[in-house]
Image 1: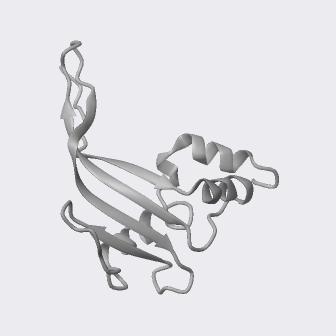
Image 2 (image 1 turned 180 degrees about the vertical axis):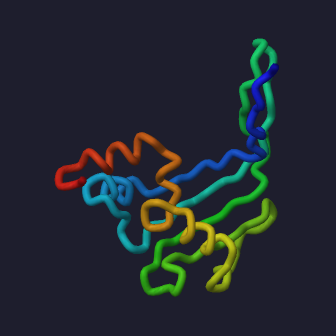
Length: 130
């Protein structure tokens, strides 16, 4: 009997953060207020040429989002969503689905830092951490 396989992911997210904000996170365990995350979303493709089925990013960005940590905002963050043809965007309204998900499921200030084991290990190994 073949073991049941989890569903394949449908997208790859590439997250960029300012190196100074990352350094602050590693030193203190928290991002500074105003930290910006640029997130590019790509569809996934499968490459079975070597007999396996490794996944890789498709050749076109499907979506782009900017997240800004903002302690004065009701959600603690602001999100800006861009389609591939947009060059400007306004902040999504308070209570939007992105903020609700981050606030419900995020680990470090509502971010998905837990998806990055090295980041979590560095935070946990810093002096004074539990």
